[in-house]
Length: 88
Image 1 (cartoon, rainbow, N blue to C red):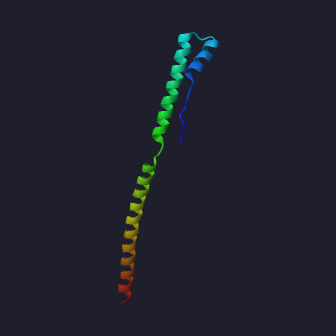
Image 2 (image 1 turned 135 degrees about the horizontal axis):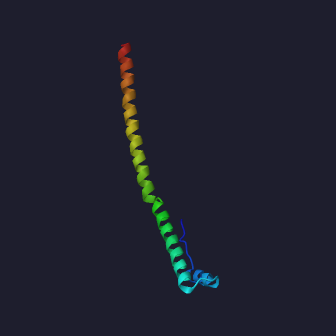
Image 3 (image 1 turned 45 degrees about the vertical axis):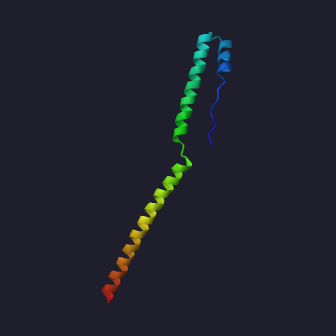
């Protein structure tokens, strides 16, 4: 499970101010970094597969396997019938 990225924007802005940024610069930097992190997190969350995604993919794969199995079974029966007809 992915955890949310949390940033203390107030503490971040205060640290910037103590490093020489003025109040507007510090607040803008804090808001920007928070927005970038939230956007990055949202994009990563969109890429995650859910249980229903996985179940749907498994169901599709099972269906394909059944179709191939039935097709191969009929092909084998046709081959066996051809061999029997050849020798009879």
